[in-house]
Length: 358
Ligand code: SAH
Image 1 (cartoon, rainbow, N blue to C red):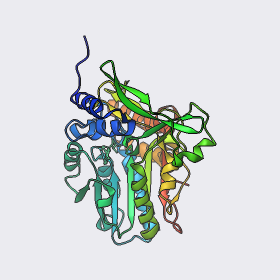
Image 2: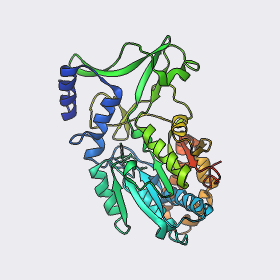
Image 3: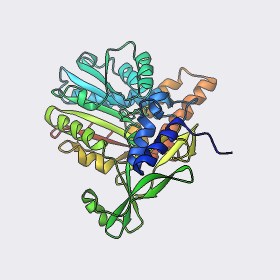
């Protein structure tokens, strides 16, 4: 028996029948953020009951330590009296809640911070509203909507991997874009005819025919905005995600119920992500400066996760203590999230990078 179609599958097939195959970028954008049937639009996917779990949901230490790094960067820049503290894709609001709790004792930090949450999903905004009920926060659809004329401190965990990618397969000196069409009644991946892509000219030197590279056009204006504001008014950005310094290979993946799934089988019901190309993010953020790419485990170790974990463990026993110890390992060990996840910081010329980054 054929599997039941998801509502988005029906819509996408009709669109493709009427106007031809769509790019992987447009497929991913529709699956994730379609106003009625998008994956993020319609649900809270995080946590054990959802499809995946993220570092802030694993342990409060993640938001606490990164928050203290940002607060120290603010102090190092002379503690500007007003600044924007923006989080991109805040999920359940857990990271921001932990950051704000950990920085309560930093004199002047809360009074100076205007907290802005950049969130596209109405479902997740509702969750964030509950988590952050004790704080004054403002929501924005895009980073464009946050004030321009102040120092800008940004945090983003697992945000960029959720932005849609374009994907290209090298063909002599041109590129075949990955597209999505319909064959035998099912959505299937295909390839457009090879064309020259000026933005990929530099990748002809480090790829061979058949190699796959991915770009993330929607990240470019976001990074340009962040980089320009940080360079002009000071601030810093801390970006954590899975990926590498330069994109290579097909990294599109679908996750449903904590397992990998076929990205084309159930549009709107599975999370779709792709690895982050941190080199592209850093380049797009010029004239802000970028640190080297550092493993999440190394950054957390430098920020003192060992001492913080030990301090928290003193009040715990039994299952709670075991959970805390395994959460600490999960965030830091290379074979768990410690080196799959990487961290990059952006900072203003003539200012030091945030602690934990070099
Ligand atoms: N940072 C959170 C959640 C990661 S999931 C955590 O670490 O737990 C990705 C988040 O980005 C979700 O909140 C999702 O709704 C949001 N998001 C995805 N695409 C977006 C877009 N284009 N604009 C704004 N938010 C987006």
